[in-house]
Image 1 (cartoon, helix red, strand yellow):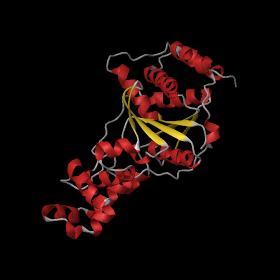
Image 2 (cartoon, helix red, strand yellow):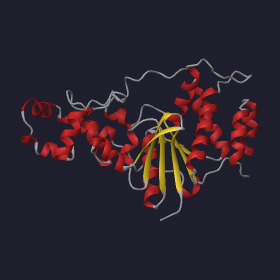
Image 3 (cartoon, helix red, strand yellow):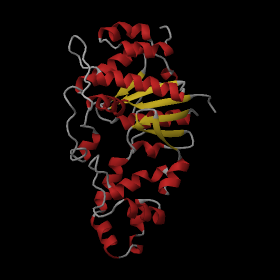
Image 4 (cartoon, helix red, strand yellow):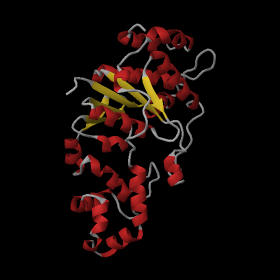
Length: 295
């Protein structure tokens, strides 16, 4: 097995959390030139904090850049219930990506895919090469990627309080494996992503059905074994169930711009220092000193 640890970060999730952690207290930092920087500062502090805690050998950051992904083409209502992000936050996505580029951190975005799909693609590649992987994210969509080599770290309060999910923990808490996460969403839906599921089926019922049948494919192949109104619900919303599973399934074959070897952990501070100081991110410069390597 390769002796390495790849930290794969949901950059959008991290930045949004960093922004609101300071926005709620009213501390919206701006540089003298008027550039909002509170989200970016928190993002870089959390990123370096995660590297401190986890000690990865490689780092990759994935970004969402559009809501009009292929899933919207399939189902226009996908994520349609989500509100708009604050105006003060929007430009900080570009700024965060710019700073990571200066720092030499491997990152990628794709307008047709979500960050989760980029995460899934690089995670499966790393896994196939024998690397140990940790996914740092704020939501549970990535739980379907958990394996013996892949741990999902769900942020509860920044990066200092994490829920670490392994196949064992999934089985213990929910009684299902990672390959059944999409079946769970197929049945119960997902209100945050506006995935419909089967109306009238909640988590408890969905888990019971999966414990009995394993997957929605097997469930629908043996629908005659389901009795009463539950069977009627499943029959009526068959199309919705399979659509929901498709929407919930992370794509793991997005073309990647980098090999795993290109993602070795580095923060090239000298390349980014001028821009960081221009933005008055002095605390970030201090944080990055611990990881500095020369270009």
